[in-house]
Amino acid sequence: MANKKMTIIASKGTLDMAYPPLILATTAVAMDVDVTIFFTFYGLEIIKKNNADKLKLSPLGNPAMPMPMPMPTFVSSMPGMETMATSMMKSMFSKHGVATIGQLLDMAKEAGVKLIACQMTMDVMGVKQSDIIDGVEFGGAATWLDSAADSQINLFV
Amino acid sequence: MSADTKFDQFLDAKGMSCPLPILKTKKAVEALSKDQVLKIESTDPGSKNDMASWAKRTGNELLKIEEGPGVFTFFIKKTA
Image (cartoon, rainbow over all chains, first blue to last red; front, side, top):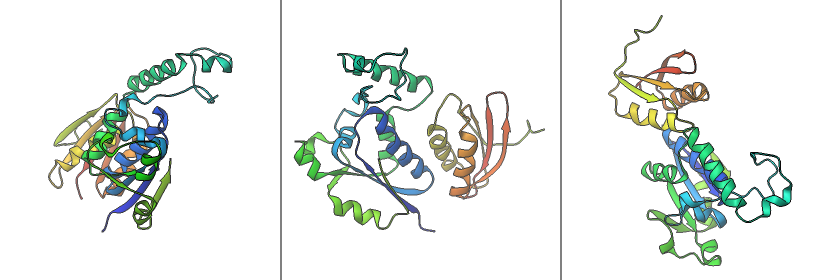
């Protein structure tokens, strides 16, 4: 039986939103599903060299963000709040035995997940091919559609 | 009733969260020969459903799940 196929568009570059594409991709491969991830816009941050474990999280504009104590919204815009929220979230992840983004990315690559970087958004945002980790292909909408048309699962994150 | 279920390899996935127990299980089962059994211990409550789904999807047989205090024990036979 031919493997099922899945594509994911990863368009976000925050710590929290980098998790779903990589968790689903690595799990899918473990369930004999062939996976393609298309990184576009801020999702490119995940596959920039030495950047996967430097992604950040902002409490700003996210009322659901867990805080150690209740605080007024404007406090979230103060200097240092992003760093604080990021390190708080990272320590919550590590306390619960969750892999880091870098580890998941390595596992995805090792398992043969196909990684595609969106050339158009790279050009717009001044990202060079040499800024991107090895093993990534470069393409556009048609490249994703070609995979997506043959896939049973297509997700936009 | 089942402390004596036979197994060939043991995977300690205690303390790991989704998706690590599944990823480690996949690797461990891959390393088995056909009909060998992997025993897995996990503390992730989600792994109870996840292991069943993984086994069904990959065509391996989930022989048994045991629920202890805070620990789930799985026996998976490599049939695929």
